[in-house]
Picture (cartoon, rainbow, N blue to C red):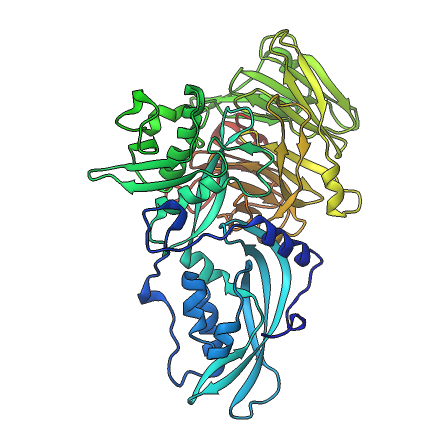
Length: 579
């Protein structure tokens, strides 16, 4: 194979990323027994797998080879058909797949009639590990491929030991699916997206195999799995409907733990449209007598990862807080009306308000209280980000002066709010000059933090213990490289995706996946940057642009334009939804 000198990824992170993939990914074995989770066999759609075409020009055959690389079956058997016999035997593909936004192919010198060398360049947007975990990374890819004629047909005779595919092939032949693990306190499920090849013989077997392997590397210190290491699973489809999941090597659990384990299994399968009931067995025996007929999603509905809290839309405008009801806006009374409110968070769990108060150059205060109660001041600083609640535990987060992350928890005995500072030393790994956090939003599961730092978008895992104390900010993962440093606002959607408002006139609004694998510019034809606030409730998006608070409903196909929120027309305001 070609020496490593022929492959250049122009970024300091590539070597570290390759090492991460090498130690963080587990190969999924293949076998002729697809019913066994630990040995499922991928089966490609043969109609869509590229094959060498006779008399194909060399550069087009090279592109066909890269398209064939999107099919991993048999250690990329389809791609090896484009290689000479010796190259096919020697090519090592057991490393992360490099995903390129586009590829440019140019010859290196002229062809001598029997051989030619091409230089392939492209913009790498991420790497895919063999456990299906995507890791975003922006760098320049460059490698050389030598082609030789064999029996009059072009074949690749020398190539680097990497698997490369264009993003268009990646999203065509792989589907993002979600595994679910339990957050540390056992209150909520946390999604762990994985990209699964569409040609696998059994999607439920694949998902359960990945679930038994445990969470991805970055997420592992922020969640736990009720399926112990070493357990294997066997999934069979029931004759009439539903699935049977037999856990092999599983130890006994108490009733509460079985319910959490069932939540992991049920929501992992249900999120991929694999409908129940789901019989969860241990060595062929049902461990929970109340579930002889299997588990349904309603049995674990308290862990529904997509649930939304029904709260009216609130708006902050010119220091006042308004509540929208029946198409009209009403000013909130109580202590909120006694202060200039700079930003606000509403806890759907306890109907509590957390407000940052203060105007102009005055010092800001983080205040907390019920609407008609007496507030308490938790924090004072020169600047404080909009506060963020966790839905189930009622924890509160905020960042002061751009660099100190505060975590407030309620003492179960006294009810008093206790103050903790999060260890944010991981921000030093960004090697940014004077990093400042302008947005800090905690996911609905409480396991991740979304941040805007110097205009760039990052996601970190909140690494916590069972007591939810001594929280550590995990290594920040930059997503949305395509946005550059234009991000102004960001928030979570119920499904775990992220909406981002920017200061870019040509692309003011984006939606990103939590792993950075998907980035879509949202409809914004009549939005005017900067988009200083965003929020989402079901299919309705809210955005505060340079003029007003606007709304857009993605269900209505005939709605091509954003419309001003009627209840606050003429009043530029910021949307506030629970958390």
